[in-house]
Length: 377
Image (tube, rainbow, N blue to C red; front, side, top):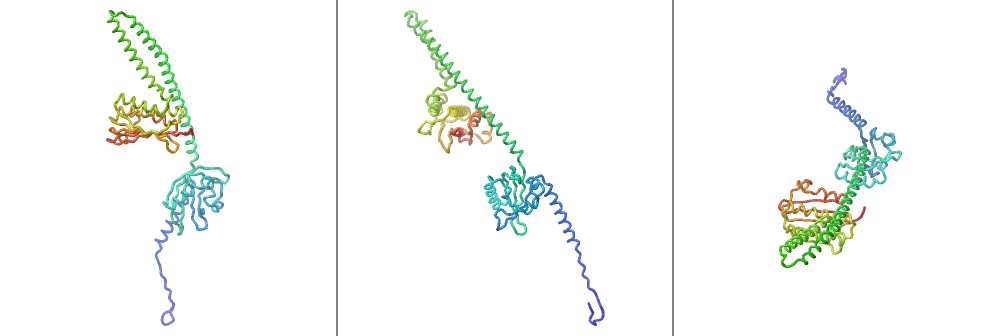
């Protein structure tokens, strides 16, 4: 510029220290390089999508190399797609539901099935985060291929099914053996005892009046035979109560409750359906055995005075509840299956696709809840 006289020429320079800015730019460049390295070297497919008013699903604005390789698209092809294009049609509704959750909570984790360019189905677990980028709602999604996990889960499911079928078969064999033993005891031993009783009576009738000592011994033997007959009946009833086969589950439960009262003095009250339940034999047997075990546990542990028993049909299931007014058990004790003797109860229910749950409160009693599907599926 010129001075006041118009003759001198000068230059005015302003020097500003931009070290800090350059440092920030270098850090930003370094950060972007690290992000790009992590983005493209991740083991999972990574997508960045951005919502727009025109498209409810938004558009891909960035994908990593793993995503391109997994789906068979080039990056340019990918960036022309929307998320719905890579989702198996059966899972679109699930994707919509999870997108709504994402908009509400800013984070979701869920499973669905992706579809590659060649239509290959890929089970994935998706972890999505919602954030704002350039003033627009943006989603970062990490999709982990869980094909192997699903394969293992299916293998375990089939193994579990085979084990349940085996357990069911063993339970059936066990019940058949019990029935056979009960029948043998009833028919063979019962018949022998009946003949003995008849013979003893005949001998007694032939004794003279002066043979009182012998008569007394015969009476004693006759009483022993009567006691043995009762024991045989009790044993056969425990092995397989005839009432379960002849009259059905509800009368059998009522009979067992009365037997329980005769032995323990613990009363039972009932809430039962008005009509008899039309159940397959294996289900009736399983429920009856579970009921027996529940009563045994009450007798051993509860110190109860009253038991409430209810049976109802609800939502395609049969629900049996056995609640006592005893000492109750703490929550952690319900997991101690061995001491409570309920392994068999749970196994029987599981075989039929049901479950047994136990809830108790110290000082307020315990409830055993048995739920068994009524159908065969």
